[in-house]
Structures are given as structure tokens and as C-alpha cells.
Image 1 (tube, rainbow, N blue to C red):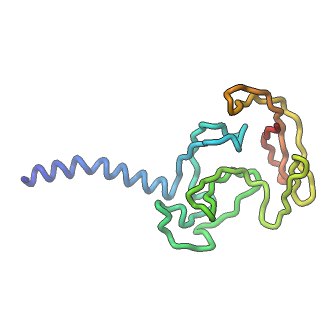
Image 2 (image 1 turned 180 degrees about the vertical axis):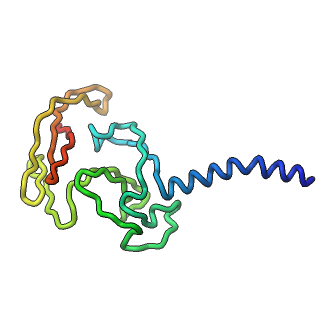
Image 3 (image 1 turned 30 degrees about the vertical axis):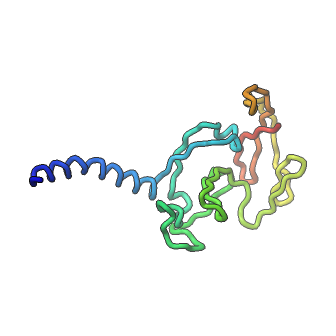
Length: 164
């Protein structure tokens, strides 16, 4: 091979390599896309929604890096605690291959429980107000009307919930 052919091949590979590098850095340090596979967060997030999450919101851990290659630690770099009402994406410590998306309702030291389908935090039942209904698809493809409520967390944040 001549030097010009090698130089031409390197020039041809340079752009895709830079693009791949930018994507790796961005998904490691800045944000990461996710697909919503289930209805556990409806009506806030729908099945099939695509979302982008900020990686830096609560700090960085070994799971922030590709292939989980970072050092194991009980703390996070630039650590910050989530607040009630935040929607968080996390990996289960017992199964890092499983990623969950959930709303934060309890903080360390809180006593959280469900009593007859109602949420209680620190021995106080959270207020809910009826807010119409939503149409939900059943597993068989049919649709049904489901009651929709607005629940208020102890810090005053409201979010919609469905009950069926």
C-alpha cells in the first residue's frame, strides 16, 4: 500500500471514530436514552415512550461508565440526594442488568406503606383528588376506562396516578 492510500483510509475512518467517541463520552457523562417497556409509571410515562435522562443529577457511580468498569464504592462522585417527586432511573444492586424507572416518594428514615390501596408516609395518608379517567389498553388489546387521581406528596408536589 502506498502512503496516500493509508492516509485516505485514515481520513475515511476519522469521522466515524470521532462520532463514536462523542457518543460514548455523552452517554457516560451527560445523558442516556431509555425506552419505556411497561406501564408502571402511567400516566406520567407511557409504554413505548423514549426518554433521555441526565447522568449527572445525583452524581456518578461505577454504573455510570460503560460496561460497569469503574471502581466499586458505597458513595458517588458529586453525590446529591433525590427529592420527593423526582423520577429516577437506576439499576438494581442485586441485578445490575435490570434498569428501573420510578418516582421517589420516600427518603431515608421515612416509613412508607400502602394501606388498602392508599399511600402513607410517616403515618400520614397522602391526599388524593379525583381527576377524571384515562383510557388504558388491556393485555388482550381491548380498552377500559380507569379512574385518575392527583396525589400530593408531603413536600407539596402533585402527580397523577391511575387506580384499577
